[in-house]
Length: 553
Image (cartoon, rainbow, N blue to C red; front, side, top):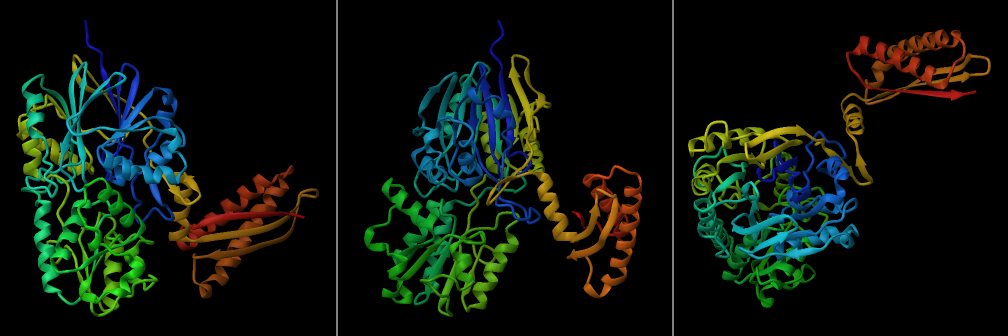
């Protein structure tokens, strides 16, 4: 008798950095694996975040068993507060990861729609038909998991975001021995593995190596005030900054709401070791000499309203940058953030600060496995089938090549994309179809669609032309206009003849439309739009937004 098939649906995270969300289906039940957001590209005008497409999930809402979080980064947990506005399901992860996710869920008032279930390293738990084992894995945030799903079709191992750090700050090693144990026992039928750094040769640096660089910087800048910036979730980096600062008698002053919150939570959980005597509030910064201060701030990615960005703009009420400040950006710009980070650095230098960043010192270590680490995991796991995940398309292709080098048989590595559905059954792994996986754009007042975003891009790049006419629909006559108004299309000194030309073309089109009889607002608007658009295109080879305005007399 054939064993029950397992289905996997990718809702985000394949072919991009962000929106990580997959669904594993057994016996008609669905277990989500992460539910993350993506930060917008520069051409996504006015967009705050980008979400996975939940269209398919809406049709299966009653089948959701829960959501497993591999770790606490926003690209893996940030969409939960949006999903929980539509669905109800428990969230399963480590205590620290749930702590990071909980804040945003509470802020959005949807905590009532979920239950937070804490699991520990190497714990094996049953959730409906899902037999899950949670394996420690090292990354740039504490207490990340690789997840082994023991299914009717064998073990499916999801690596989570990972690196093979042999000297982690907290001593919590990746459990390669357990992965090897599964492999040499029942075997690993399918490996889903992080592809972010698959093009990068060699091994990633240990996080602990950054600590030595930070110590040296503290030594080189004795007597100066030090301001550092990193991800608020990067508690291992915060620990090393704090250790280095304390070695030179400095107090640690958190700056930014998420940094203060995460430091307090990590200390309470015993993950971060900073004594009370070494911490101070930003309100008390004036009580210390410059050489006694180490500010630990958010904003390492140049986020518009982050603490470091406001500091560079001279807008922080407690702290003003001076020539005696050294700013250390202990991070590397996420692709797409380079311009924002560069602007923040420029502003800080303009205010007199000396800025140290990853381009001039080794103040950052990646949290993602490079080529040799990916090969190591493949050699330990020995999967029958492999699907690269988490990365842009070229990263996944590079990872697939590595799988071939490490013995995964030809034809047994599948490169999937957002929306792809796979089935794992007795015959093997294959693609079976697609589900909607479009970008869902969110700005301050809710979701918007792709059409609205395209309108914004047209307005930003081409401008707008409005043509205003006044119509007496009772008599079918044009009684006013056309009046032409524009913004962002042509320079005022060039507009005279163009305006006259548009008005003539629009007037002729409206008169012709009215002469046909039975005029309606929509018919007149269509005539105005077509006439104005054709004239503008002919004369300027540009395509601004055409806005017909029909006023009824």
